Image (tube, rainbow, N blue to C red; front, side, top):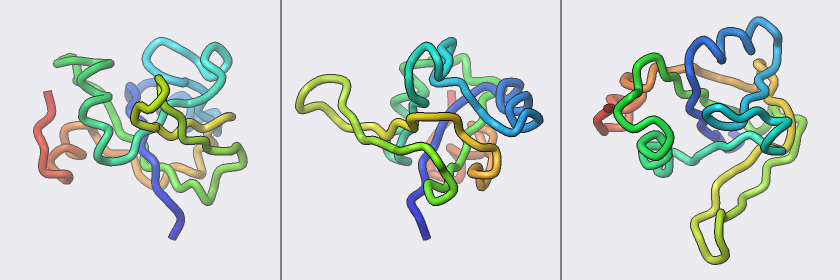
Length: 117
């Protein structure tokens, strides 16, 4: 099986993208066009990303589970600063068909053994 990446987003944004067939948000409040890529995480990175972007305002968040084998755009692992932790970035639109599962943030945290909010 190919690698799975995670992306945290607001449910209405995902629902609109699902209907359109592609997701083009990069991170909270920034589009793919503005940022140049879609921010993703590995499972161990997601809780810290959620805290940094949303804090305790986690109502209505969903986790997209992405199959990299279904992506047409390249994925690059990049650090925000030299020597820092590398995060996966998708350099193009995310096809809705590449999303294997959509979990509520709270259900995802329960699945991973953590706590949301």
